[in-house]
Length: 313
Image (tube, rainbow, N blue to C red; front, side):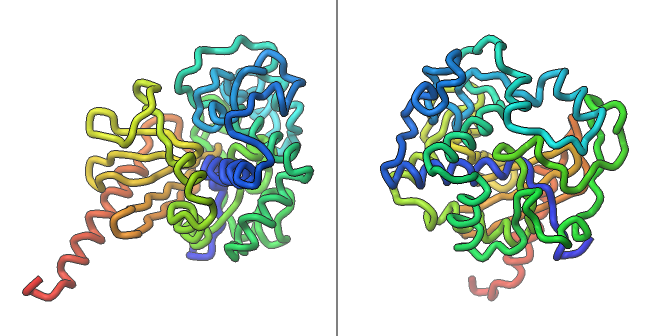
């Protein structure tokens, strides 16, 4: 591994999808209060779900990545080229759950479809024109539309997911991410990730009204709207972003994206503008230690900064 390595950034992709929809809202092309029945009438069982409920994980629509049939198909051949229609087939016909916080990757596939329908363009092209090119994110791409040398710059991903028994503790393909798409399919570098995070949280990408919407939180614990997080209610989910009361680092914006072979965590510190980004080439089902590692990095950097201050300060 080196500083130029590229990574499957997983669900960090979700904020990209949210920003595209909020930009379209700012242009008057949709409202995040629109119902799915307006944009995706092919899913009548979900017609009353709003775009905002998709983005805030409060739709009640089940996640395709939790379905045994999907996991079996992926484990049989991780190089499968999944279409949106095939991914949706794993959850079509399943009952709609209650409208409370429940993480579901299906929400962001539906969001991707709405981006395409409202913009009359592909998700890939909207990402490139609205985010990747303006921010100079030359290391960021959505497979299969990646430069030829992309795979060679990626450390081999390893799965430790018991849900994928054939690939337990084995390598997985670097660029076969069609199973994730707008929910988690992007590849990027840590340098690009920090550029993205700084633009995302500084308000560079959205008008102030849409930035407020992006950062509007529901409690992961209670599913109720919250202004901020506390030690008793430490995690709030926005529209593809997360606010976290970290036991060491304090109140931060953070997200850990995970594929079946990579994990990429970022933390943004609003008071200082500092960003910590960490990537590893393995995935875990339980016992994730990256948030603790980020806390250790923060303590180390904070101690170093304190040592560097003049004595009278």
